[in-house]
Image (tube, rainbow, N blue to C red):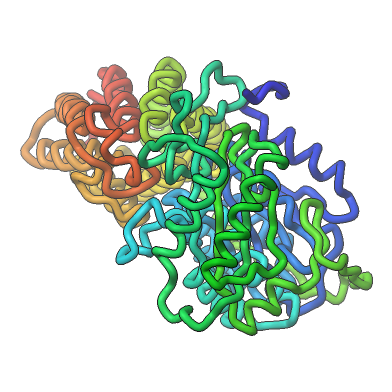
Length: 580
């Protein structure tokens, strides 16, 4: 159990403060994470690791010379927001561009992708790469759908070493891709982990059993087996990885190896296991090169471990062995000469000023309605937070309720401020959307942020919206969510509730129904659709590898969306003031 915390909602913020204070020679805190304590040379590619907290030493523990230039740190088991990723990138960028490295999780893919596109728009070359080393999360012919777990450590190390040598951005990306293609991981759990402030673990494993194929975000294994001896486990891990040996590595007998503890498995236990693993690798004709045994990618206090093999060629072996000096990992400590910060490119490339128009006429009332809707959303999300967390824990990490509360609180505060400044409805909703995405993080944060922005973009600044504009707003929200997240109806996501709502609302408005009536009936359809997701198997996102567990339970994203839409419908009288 995670016992030491202040406010559970600020666990990550407090951790970053303490981490930076403990390692001032390596890192300094910036909004959204940490970067190296001293600027790097001009023109160097900035390699940034990232993901939710709860995995230390990953991801912030490997920031320093020879390894990462910075780390973007999300809430516990939650992807960082695009705003935080951009913030860390701007602090670390030295003129050679930025590479975001992270595990293949929907929220990370969306948010880091958004940040990269925004940086590109500011004139900063930026790329993303998602690690896919977990062999248990998808079959060998679907490697692109696999999760990223402890094998990311090897990918991060080689890519960072290439950047340290002076490779250009395209070359650093190539090294990451090459390492990932030759890296495989298999993990097991003996018991689950507990989120700060929670009174029970996200999952449990029966005594004498183990969960095979766990995730690193508190997800249970995809199957269970008998827990035998260390010898039995070593054989299962090595056999499983060798059966998935990457194509083109038959002549390569040298491997980078990581035997990783997940937080509660003692080092002595790991060394017992390593003795058996090392012998089995030798029998298979494989030679470990500087193997790493210990905690490198944890999952809070989860009991368990994982084994990673990365088949090396001459290039990757050189990069794997290259010096590094970070708070949690070192290879022949590398000292850096001081670099004059003035020699770095001026940080003048910033996002353009997008000052919003002020509202006038009936648009002021529309902005007030937007704020009232967010207040209704806040009330229902706080009411349902625990229930949403339980839904999410069935096949995910259990943080959906907490994340939605953080998102809506930030969105409401931003919207109230924008409305107090008499900004137009578009600016009010844009401020709300950006704040929601920045504070909630994760897939839901990014999607809600995009949806609110899309709705606001349709609303006029000098009058009440017409019926056709309200219909377009609902449709634009759906388009923004589906284009960003890639989900379709039937994938068991919030789209299963949003699509029927947007379609019904738009159709009824265009056939002459009163706005309040059209909205209420569309919200009822969303609520029914959310309930019906219980019968679906997830085809996207973090719940996909545990799809069977999810059957019988409604999707938390669809459920929370439907609850918000229903709560907003209770505003009735305000919604009922039909536009022109």
